[in-house]
Length: 488
Ligand code: FAD
Image 1 (cartoon, rainbow, N blue to C red):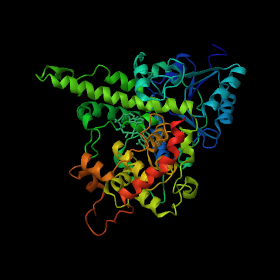
Image 2 (image 1 turned 90 degrees about the horizontal axis):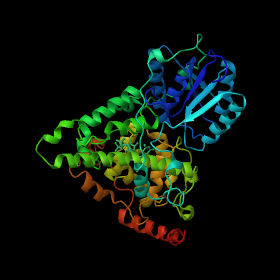
Image 3 (image 1 turned 45 degrees about the vertical axis):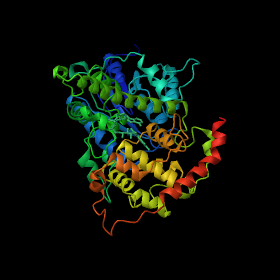
Image 4 (image 1 turned 135 degrees about the horizontal axis):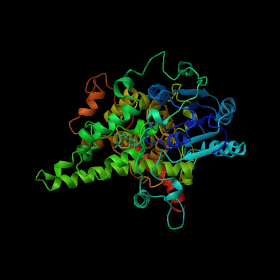
């Protein structure tokens, strides 16, 4: 350990806004130095994708919750803004810090972290990065040739062969010490993360409780109330999934905590006694629910590994042949999501006015709550790409702006999956038929009528496209790139 013990240790938080199971926090606290916990709002550095509006709303509340939790332990959260490559070293100098800890990130912004690690180490600081946001580091799950997996199933099989560590407890007040003088902090209100005119966040406030406590409440209510219905996860009217995605996105809960909570929980309802209820099927069904749920956490890991190996996942087709796809409208023609698209089909899609009920219900759910059911995400994405022939990047950007769980890896990876251009993607000829999807997954129409009160009245628009005709056109367009894709 270098320097005198009064020199602080800096914990630099990014996508890990929690106190429990935070390896960087545990490591920083173990040094016994005064602890400075900093969040740097960086919107301009290379490799950073500026947050969308819904994510900003979440971040504001998550930082507020984190500051309150730190104050309970006698500390505080220090807020700074600016390019991290300048802001962090400036804080180090200001505080005469002896060490810096962070949990790794996997976007192109990791180049910033690598640069900081070497320059601060050269100055004599202890600088350590930790694994806090994934079960497995991307570079630990490689195929026999040492290359990244391109297909999920073998990836997940290999991942599950590796042990998952126990989750770390949050430090107690007695385990932490704080600087005598708190460092200056930005006023969060000045970051303008919340919408004002208009305040469109009412539905988000009704739906979500950002922060570590909210995340654990979600996990516990999922285990107690929804996990047993997880086999119905494809039905949008049924509340059968965890709702943990934004909490995972901001690192308010870790996949390690979720894994440890569910591993061995074959009861499906968090109640280890129900294997004795006389039905031999129950434990099997429950085990299947848990395994399926954990495999979805696996998709998050797989998506992150794809991004790690393909930092331009949000802009470049993973399968290069698809970069030549003859879109009816390109992303450049559509422009910035903060402006009206100027293209009526895009506008109708964004606003949930396409005249296709399942698509419109999903897009309205998204606008109102900041989330959308997974099955419906696939349907609205397929509709945009394959019925409207609009570049998947335009849809990805809209989701980026409006989803509270908008994720650097999962969003583009899933959009590319639907487009057919991604790893382990849906085959290009798979065009979801939104009418049949509704019949199958929302047979009573409960979900669509929840979001479209005017359904069945003259106020609801006629379909803006003919599904069969546009499907044919899409397949022709896909044929144009199919041959090239096959030779890749
Ligand atoms: P659960 O079913 O409870 O799943 C548990 C967790 O597993 C989720 O919280 C999430 O972290 C992860 N997960 C589940 N499905 C996927 C998946 N297909 N890919 C990656 N991780 C998954 N998910 C995001 O977290 N951020 C995004 O930006 C995002 N964009 C998407 C865009 C499209 C076009 C599609 C089709 C899917 C997208 N998803 C995204 C995946 C998925 O829809 C959400 O993770 C899921 O709906 C969140 O609900 P839940 O937490 O109740 O999921």
